[in-house]
Image (cartoon, rainbow, N blue to C red; front, side, top):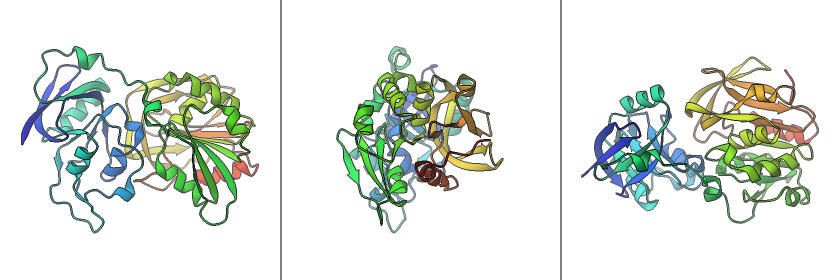
Length: 358
């Protein structure tokens, strides 16, 4: 067992044991609160450029099941209090540490994840590094930036996925780091889904005679994706659009709105969101560090969902533009299925029914 060190951007250092692909790695340190779903977390492209820390103390108890992967593993590092060495599940194919090695991810265990989480909650998300030896300087850690990650994780080719059962609609999916379950949720509703790279021009989508456009989740600062915003602006109003997570933020920017970085973000499968139309609160899965500033869209869109903890924007509807977006993940794998009905709302939008106003 080899010693390793987690060094935070503020200089604090935590000693633990290295696992996985043993090397030095720097990223933006974030925490996620899910008790299960570590495979979906590790294969969620939205974590590109980040070191992910699990707040739940025991991870890996059901091993690795490749069927549950959501996309490419793009994390810069992985931290847990303890990782199971003896997973037990009839679907288990191999242990979590082998997954980390296969995907060239360094892991660190045996650190006080509760204390580190409290630091992030108080001081905010910060850069950090996992090291084999304590670094002499914090300069490299502090200068790290999460950039170019949407291009990194987006598909490089156009791919089509058939509808399950009778084909009812054709959907273009703009892939900014899409989770696989977005495609599955559309397929089982009779949609043939064509996935496009993030650099695809709006004209190609509009000329493809699609019934609707899905804007996916993805990593990084939404304001970095200037070209994507330009193309989304051309789509809105011309075809039904449903955006999730980064797709929600990019749509807000395309509509003239603004976004901000959250203090420590929302990540996990237990995030409460209030529906401002029905007044009902849903438990959602989330993974984001940025939020739409609702006031920046006054007179342009209606806020339809709000975070029950901090009041940040969780969803927007754009009247007469055939467009609505949400910050959380209605496809929720792994997580609650409370808001999967939003895919039905998208199908209704394609059929000509506007998202209800509050």
